[in-house]
Length: 504
Ligand SMILES: [Zn+2]
Image 1 (spheres, helix red, strand yellow):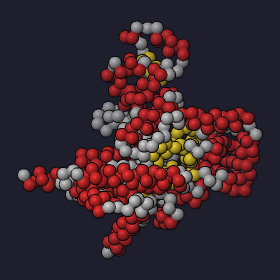
Image 2 (tube, rainbow, N blue to C red):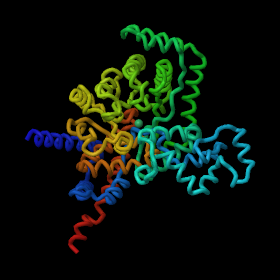
Image 3 (cartoon, rainbow, N blue to C red):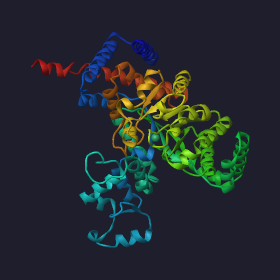
Image 4 (cartoon, rainbow, N blue to C red):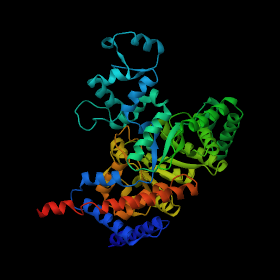
């Protein structure tokens, strides 16, 4: 009974929010209302019953406008096929035995002098000409075939994270080409905005600063250690030059990205796997970069959360964010937090990551948040997120592949039930080989949301973007127009193909 009452309340709240989401639209005509209702009925028909109509859902969500992809890693978003093309662009080759990219000029030159059949280090064309090698390479540079062949495989999380090491040398160049490809793909699946974790903010290390932060007995000592390291960095010409280059490189690579159909913005990110002085220097650079450039709209923290350095220094990292957020209060934070499943680490490790990201670091958005049900204060976390309007970024394919969290075991069920706002995003669509439409298809087929809820989630992408209000309004108006076109299209489709078929 309680459950029924609460789901009714949530349904009412969602309906009210859907109304708010559309409030900025020009007054709906009777025709546009009828189209919206027809679209809602159409979706309900596709997800009703024991077996959702996946193919029809795929068509529906491929066409449906998706406001934004807010949890998006640039290097993980490009497909391995593109990285193979980048080999030639950069004058590199890939070792035929190890599938690692060769960067030594002497080796590359020697290989080039050989006849094609004798080369052990392959160009883009060599790879494409050799089906076996190409396939083997794609299996190492992405999750291709992981679920459908019987070869001996590494654990899925290692398979996932080690792909970045394989394509690393070509993902750190050709940025504008890569961004243009992502733009083209976004437009093709009706995505209006991407906020991508683009480049690691520059970092520099210092053993004394490491020790001062590690050994600080209390918060006052830690603050003193961070301040001292910050002052050292700010006086360091190399740090300042690297930061200026970083900001400039993002500006240069943004050429021809924004237009009336598509907008891209960038997050600086830090890597949680390195020593504290490096994490701090990178974080400081990220905050400064975001303060200097309108293109850089936030800071994030990445790297596998279950690894020893991430677990050891988690709280320290959150306190670094708190320290810098008080100095740069306008800089927005989207933080990977609680990307952990039971068994990844001992149970104590699952108890506080989302909570500290919210309450210590001051996160404006939570990435993944899949350890929620294990956190000591899960109900309070959800209340805070709901009350402060802090969304969680849901990445279904990624969580299923890396952490085995899916179906009824995915906490999106909890976030929805407690009224926490959420967005649907891709994480690393190139590595795990999917797209944003597929994430919506997965979500709808698994959790049977109403069309009003789906539409709200699509608008949430813009609502929770780290953009100035005026930009958001522009993207909202664009989304209104796209949805009007989409709903008119769906209303013109055969109302219920499966019913017609059954009648035959
Ligand atoms: Zn991520």
